[in-house]
Amino acid sequence: ISSRPTSRLARLARMLRALYSRLGSFQGVARTRPKLHCSASRRAPLRTRALASSSTSLPADEKPQASASGDSSSPDSSTGASAFVARVMPRGPRGATQGPTIECPSCGSVIKARHPDQFRQHVGKCCPDVVPEVPKHVWHDTHMAVEAVTIHEQELLRVAKQLAYATDNRLPVAEVARKMNLPLNRVKALLRKASKAIPLVADDNALAVIFENHELLVVNKPPGLRFHPTHRFEGNSLLSRCLGHVRRGKSLEDLKSTSERNTSSEQTVADVTAGAADCDADAPRIVHRLDMDTSGVCLFVKDATLVDGFAKQFRGPEECGPHGRARKEYLALCVGKVPKGDVVRFENGVTSGSAGDAGDDDVSIESKTSKTFTVDAHIGPHVSIPEARWVHPVPPIDPKFKVGGHPDMDATAPKQAETVCAVLSREHFELEKSGTENKNMESLVAALVRARPLTGRTHQIRVHLAHARMPILSDPLYGPHVMWGGADAAENRSDADVVFGGTDNLTEMEKKWGGDLWLRRPGLHAHR
Image (cartoon, rainbow, N blue to C red; front, side):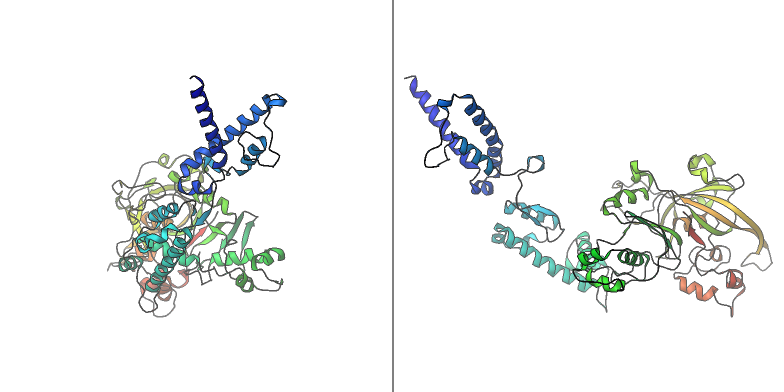
């Protein structure tokens, strides 16, 4: 009686051992019951080690022997155990079973494809508008589902490009999203993908290189040159010139591997671009920008792995984190009145506070004989000119605020900005007040100002100096001809050049601020 339970347990143990030995080679389990497959594959190595240890501990005459026919399927044979170890599925990081992967046609992410539901679940999060467009039976085959999603993405991209880039009636992105009945971020992603598919154009124009190695490229930007092209199929930008410089510096072997054809050293950058049109991997990365009419030092990153670290150093103090913030200094030719106080805030441009408000480290640019002041005012959109910016009062706290941005944040909300300025030299002169019948004179100064922005906002230095009543000379938007001469801000620099850069039929105001005094560019230079 007592032997029956023992014999039943022994048979059950043998059945379980046989099941575990064959489970690794049973491919259907991995597709239908992935959890069972993973649990079994975790236990199998333990059992293999137990078999190996038990086989070595047994006497020689009691060790199990392989059959003469070469059958190694017996769970108690050492040969079967070694064969079972070879069939164990490889495992990836965090214990995840490695397997086939596919690339999402919409976002480009790499997805596991061991089960069709994995791709369908990803598409439901990535582009949920595609799920109802694909028939249900197609989702059972991953390859068919990928092909169906690809076709749908191509059709959406064609419609979006037709609406957004029409030659006769181009629509804004928000209107394209409304017509296509898609979320705004979805349409932006489609158009961004279409834009990146166009290769950048490289320029043959010379580039003033200050420093270069295999990781960084520092250049001197001339005034009047765009930092990046208006469209990727257009050149005539600083980025295009940097791309041409990098490609010209490549060795002959690199050019062969990139273009997959023979090239000669006498070929121009345009010839090289034809071969490398399918890839912009060699394009320098942008980590900060300068206005079109601002000249000076610009930094590009050639190593893609370093882009994020350098970009954070050019952001605000809350985003740069442990990397520290990059120090930028500009030189500006200004005309106006030097602030009496040490801190200029939003309230009608009045000055208040003390030099200690800027921090000891930020006031270090001050010399013994210079006047230092800090402009601390939020910057936001201009009330009437879309291209311009202006100071705003401190806005209420946004509950959706997030460092680095949030999809639901108001992009037009004023942002905190701070600039430390030092008047290096000045010259006093008298100017007749505009708009007065009596010739009342006003005392102004022409000054050379060194400015250090502590944040990175559009037109920050130009707006802050104009708010401090020290506008930059020949600035078409905020210059002294607007503040002290009563002229209207020019939305386009070429319009201001026509008015103030000429020599004939000039009004009294235009003669004061135009002619030889008009620099045809803002007097702002990125010093270092």
